[in-house]
Amino acid sequence: MTVQLRTVSAGDADTRLDRWFRRHFPQLTQGALQKMLRTGQVRVDGKRAEANTRLAEGQEIRVPPLPEGPAPDTRQRVLVDDREQRALEAMVIYRDHDVIALDKPAGLAVQGGPGIVKNLDAMLDALKFDAEERPRLVHRLDKDTSGVLLLGRSATAAAALAASFRGREMQKTYWAVVVGEPDPPDGRIDLALAKQGGPRGERVVAVEEARNAIGMHDPRLGARAITDFSTVDKAKRRAAWLELRPVTGRTHQLRVHCAEALGCPILGDGKYGGNAAHMDGLNGKLHLHARSLVLPHPVSGTLEIAAPLPEHMKETFKFFGFEEPRTPKPRKLA
Image 1 (tube, one colour):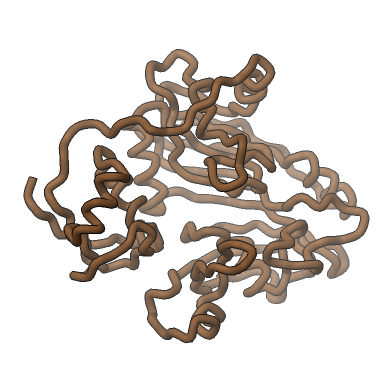
Image 2: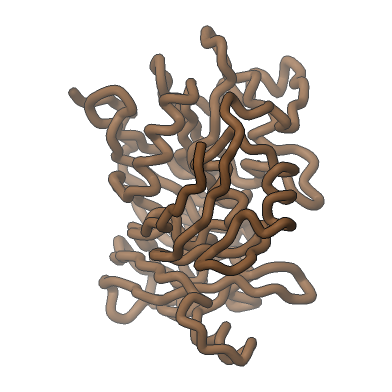
């Protein structure tokens, strides 16, 4: 293989450089990439870069000659007991030869990280069923967000599903209970976001706030983030049930957009709403639910998958008098 120059697509914007390499060149180990970065073989717009460099659409990446072959499997794996096996299988709401869809509960981390002892990715061997390969994650949900999570049952299926997410070929619908009532009740939020470190860890901020805090005006500092929203029901200005349809998929996008752009933090979201995100007498968990996905099936047709509300949101719906509609059964359309 010779040196390549790759242009960052819109679907890869705001991705870390090391994750971009894992996505496009899975045979490359993290150690090998780090060596290439240290020696300047990998460059972004002609400049040296770090593994955690955030990419922007249109940037040019220099890719040196790479080894061929499959990537070594270095993922964390854990053995699950019978109780955990049953719990994981109970999350499955759709399964075919290529795809598994889970109804992920709030509180379960999708991947490992600092302070995370238990995560779904480490337990995916328990969801192989009749397949030879373990299923693969193709997208993420925050630990405290519930709802539809897709897995690819083979490398080919996972790549096709991941491409649908990057290419925005799917319809993603989230439900949220927010504190207050947005005005106007529906519309589009177009507010760029940036990641910012701090004494309490990384958080996401509106781009102007990030520029002011850092004292920079680099247009690449923030990534464009777009969310369509509509109010489904409301409770005397105390709270509202929103349907959120993210056009982009930035980290914590919906949480920041609700708190910053609408002035209505998601109930239970103390990270971005502070004390205003909590109400006396109501469950303190995050009230954000990945309600449904509609996307191309990796082989043919279209998948439509929905997940019912988690118990803590059902209780809050009942408290405010919101009527939860019936959850349709997942289906594959020709």
